[in-house]
Image (tube, rainbow, N blue to C red):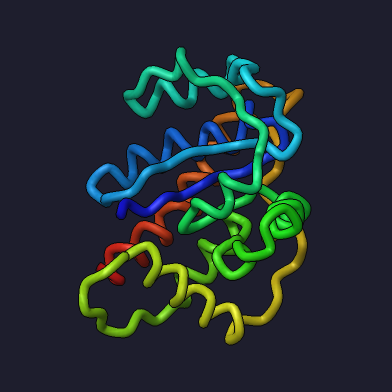
Length: 184
């Protein structure tokens, strides 16, 4: 079974699709499916033009991307759910309470991944092992300030704001990737 990572934001037009495209590039050697959705997305809406530019920079063609509204089955089918904000994380866990222990904000999971200790494994899912290690680290770290967990929405901003957001996403994915590789 292939693991699934789901990125969630508000409208699935900026942060989560940028995260989806960036994660696909960074996780290309990991057996994982990457997708995104929005808690208030309009199914079929196009990606924001500035987000398209970021996604195109990953080497992929984002032309066919269309927003999709978050549904409980997206959450129950995901091995790891990474939301842009604490509010969106809360919506995810309200929609699918069973996903609670594998749902984080992206920045929160990055912080936990950097502090996680992965025990030796006997095969199995590296994503699941990474999630379990991050969940254990959750109990050892001091709570962060709200701003430390939320990824700022670039909507209404300039292309530079979108690029900064994408850079923050990529900085947050790198410790996740390192944890996945350690767990593997």
